[in-house]
Length: 435
Image (cartoon, rainbow, N blue to C red):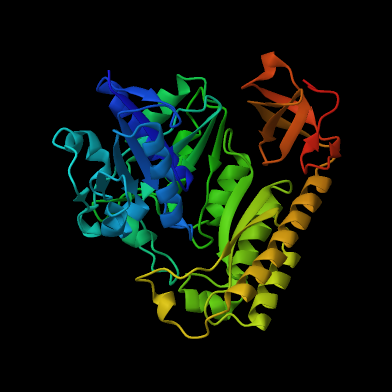
């Protein structure tokens, strides 16, 4: 029995796809092993968002070859689509598959033999038109369910449309089948994921369904305790969606909404599809419907043309918003994007300083949000994450909770009272389970 090992870089979407591809290998009789073990084939699913994508890829390939010198190493994912030739020249790489080819990996491997130069199968991104269903099952607590892929937006800083192609979605019928399959497992929480999930419903180039219809349908699936929406654009998060989540049986009060900048000038330069005023409306609506909702924010610092005053606009704007945490990204140049041609390049030192300021703000926002939840009771999904006699889990509104370990509570949902914010930045539940 041949052995195969996987390594995933990047987002939840990549994890869902890696997990699905690994199941295809197991169905063909391969034995899946940990990446640290010896294997015949190593599959590395790459990301293009991180600045060190190339460096990280090289390190992982080197690690695989150290484990198994005669192994066959395949690179897939966003970085593989964007820079196939560059990746093919990394020592130890045997094959590179692009976006349209990665789900046909097994089919390609049948004809692959080790050669002096790496095999490259990466067609133009316009060929990536098929939607490939995917969900992860490595963790019995939660799964990442892919509902959408690609993006039709042309944000000036982003390479994702070049790496994943145009927006396309699975059908609600197919997603429902996956949800029922997941419901038969031990999984308690499903995270809906995609590139631009608010744009759900595009099939064969036409909009046939909508995101609201999808979540309304999924809410009725018995056997799944919770759904979490991974990230949704503010212009696609309408009042109907917010109102539905507020009264739904299974969708949790947690939203992650990309902002990118609090300056309208920079939002226009970025080619975003909203202004800050709309963002304020969305946050206010969520807090009106769900006062204890957790709201996460993506923000980019150092975009070309961002002056110190523009940055302060962003900082002050976020500081005034009732949001819960930030994901801070330091702008880095990406080939074939509009942003690399723009004037007003911000020095890297200044970019890093601005990012550090926002990360400190994020910690303050998170602490304030946690403090606001003290004395309240929430349901927590407890995980098999044990450290020094304590176990951890997340509430429906994304508070990380710490309580004394009890083996019978692993992968269970229990109501607990928020008693203290500890030095680690998590919630202490000293008296364990309330109900």
